[in-house]
Amino acid sequence: MEVELTHNSGGPEEFPRDGLPEVAVLGRSNVGKSTFINTLVGRKRLARTSRRPGKTRRVHFYRLAGSAYLVDLPGFGYAAVARSERRSWQGLVESYLRGSRNSLRGALLMVDLRRGVESEEFELLDWLATEQIETRLLLTKADKLKPGQVARAIHQIQKQTGLPPESLVAVSGKTGKGMAAVGRWLREWTGLAIRRPDGSPLLD
Image (tube, rainbow, N blue to C red; front, side, top):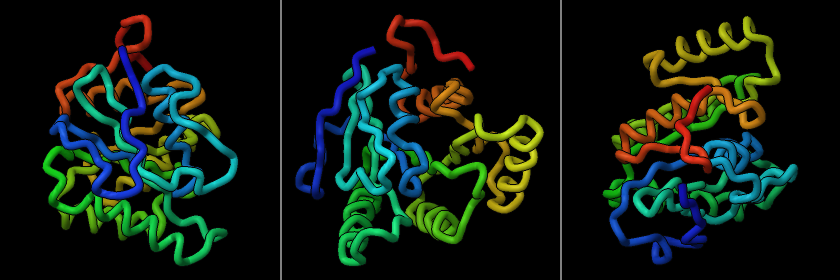
């Protein structure tokens, strides 16, 4: 499947205008958004990864098979940058997510399974609901916990958020766990079937 970074946008004037369906990827800084994108599409270095939180400071549009976008938004919750810079990131994210973006079909909110849903994620979930943006939770770092711990953490997060069980999945950028479920969500939202580079379907 052809995948390419087509827009590296610093403001709304640089967002694509072709009307292709889009799915936003959101999450706390260093939650693993770039690793997730690379694993999902089977590319090692498409989205740049870094151990330094806050690396993504612009909106990155990755076009999939010429027919849909994954949209990597700047992370939040990183305290080691200037407050003014954090405000500018927030403004950039909100400029994308607010209701005028008709091509936006849904959002994937990434949460570290080990930390659970914290105040900023709860606020973002409420804000996305107000904007009527359908949101699913990707619970990352699943490979860092034992299976029983993963199951308990998922149950707790589902109970806290009130989201239906089918709207949460534990994922791992290291092992590929959960990617098939994400692929089904993307097909539901965009009509695009995500496949591995060799053309095979996504399987957990």
